[in-house]
Length: 110
Length: 113
Image 1 (tube, chains in turn purple, yellow):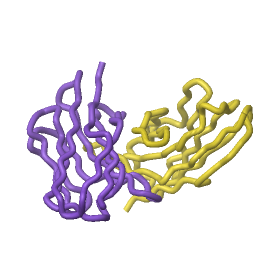
Image 2 (cartoon, one colour):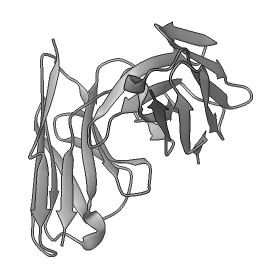
Image 3 (cartoon, chains in turn red, orange):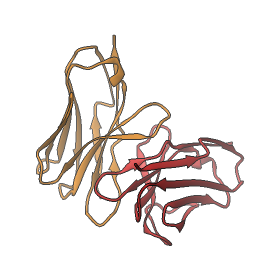
Image 4 (cartoon, chains in turn green, brown):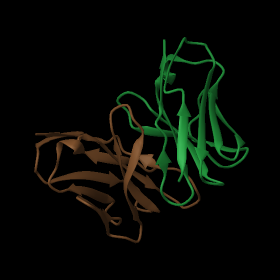
């Protein structure tokens, strides 16, 4: 069966520090991968999606970036975090029409 | 630009009630629509997926309907239970080229025993 992992579960970082969130999927090949963010009082917003290794599409311009170094690995990064980067970050995968979500990473930027 | 709206934002009902959650979208050219459940601080669980050619989908006590031409979907929950308490999210895909879901802000449901 397919499994999606995200880590860390919770992260507290100072403003201006770098960020790296990792997402891995098991039990499937060539998935579409997605990063979403859920900020307080707002809905889920798509940040990046990838249809293959090295292929990244950005939906929202900001100081975040994403990379897909392997088929089932998706990384969300930032060189310098902003206060507004705080939120709940969710990774998801799909190979057909249904998207499956990971457990999420709660990021607090102070 | 596709926008998804969910009404009400919050709902409190006593156990056993049947209830309806509403979702509307501005662009009727959708590929499919999904309903998700999110428990506090957790990821999302897919409940029902309706393809654009379908009118409804059922799973247990849940029934989701889709009226694409009017840009509306409803999630019907029968005989609600305290364990149904969660935030319910509606999301649409506007094309089949692999782009992702556009979400509403959700309806937070509280079922009291």
